[in-house]
Image 1 (cartoon, rainbow, N blue to C red):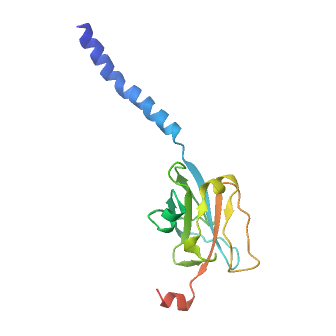
Image 2: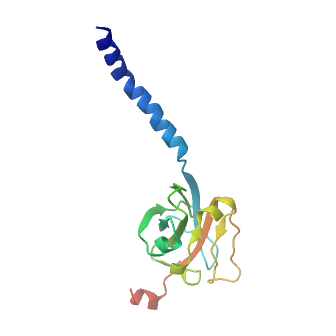
Length: 155
């Protein structure tokens, strides 16, 4: 009888102890938040309600191949937040849907998550010599402009 009671008690406590184990696992793998801000490269105004694609990966090559991505829509300030697992994601690349990035060779550019979290990263802005921004730790800033008529024709 005592063995039956002990077995039932163990089964009853399993979910509780299992929850503790899951909570400990979650604590060991914290995610980090990165604020992505998209600005118009011509005038520095926020790109509000802009659809962004954020390509992620463990290496630059993985990011450049666009193997894994997440989507984000900016708020009225041109900002949005993504949450990443730093054990899996070491590099990111940001694209503004339907726009042209103002940085040179955008597909070859990716940003280190370690640099973003420690210093912040602002992409180069070749669309205007006047518009530039300083990023804060945990922030990445990208500049984009509307496509020209010729660029739209070649889609």
